[in-house]
Image (cartoon, rainbow, N blue to C red):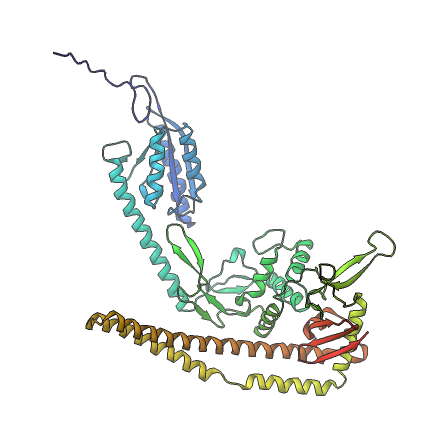
Length: 522
């Protein structure tokens, strides 16, 4: 009969340490609080103190560190620097055991929790969850962890849904909250609503004024940077997109479009631009305005007009002078850059790019003087011009689109109800699929037609309002212009001119914002 001798294990399969070797386990703790409330910070400090004493009190343990994260949600580990540092140290062999309060403190995401625990287990690092009394190397540890992590994840989902519901209820009630730390011009008022912050408001008004005077977003950004004006987030360098977002933000006119973005996944906290997937709420007069609504609308109209990027720099003429031969923009070019005859000329950007345009090269002074001549012609009978512009403005506003818009909106509501009823009837009467789909397609077509009609009417109304505001700005500038001492200035040019076309016979066509077209021979 064979003789069997049992050779007892000498190495712990989890820790990979000799069983008979006296060894103190290197122990670290992890503490996290998820909000920035004062009482939570007290809890945070208490956790650090508690785990430091807790670990040092055990003779068989050697204290390593208490890793911490403040004010960070537990649904993902991506932004938890303390947590990531702890995992990194553990995988490098600096830690044998991690102690933490509970699974929900460690992670509320089942996948994150299990992935990290398995990584640690492969390196012989155990985790102890004090509240649940679970050691991950213990019998059934992983099963219990899976169950407990799933519960914690559902808890996080529930919290996320409650928060989302609360936000949407606030939206429905017209309550506006701003990210005040990085939102220029407003601070949180005593009633919890936005209140104007004077210093920031001055910068906002200046940005709008500079843009109306013809300065591009890039020029405004570089000017503010040179002057050392801090950005909304406190940085020293202004970017194009920061200025552009300030110019486009409706909150500066005292209104608020709420839920521009929404959370796609409560675990990743990923935000997506709302293109109609969830409801939006537009609140008018929700808080004090920094920018007059008409001025804000004027800026939106100018932004639309300036969709063609001004690639030639900061000059007011950039993007406004057009080659009549090829339709390309005129840009500035330096001639004789290295000698005493150095000067800047304007010519078609395509002139030497394979396109043989015959339009002339011009200097800036010639263009500006020709503009003043055209303006003088336009203002020959100033009072008559203003009277005609007021009539045009009146006609623009005379068309009432409210009634057809309301009809289109009601049609959408009716068809939406019919769609719901159609789906209900299919389930109740067991309609044939072909008949059901034929009727459903007709209803969808009817709804789409009503929606397209409504959108076109809305766009037409916005366009008419903006044209009216542009005309009023034109009128105001003309009224303030002294025709006897007419001088070129950027604001006057920007508010009166759409573009200037240059023809090969050396005449310039000035297209004014009131619709006038005046030709000047050079």
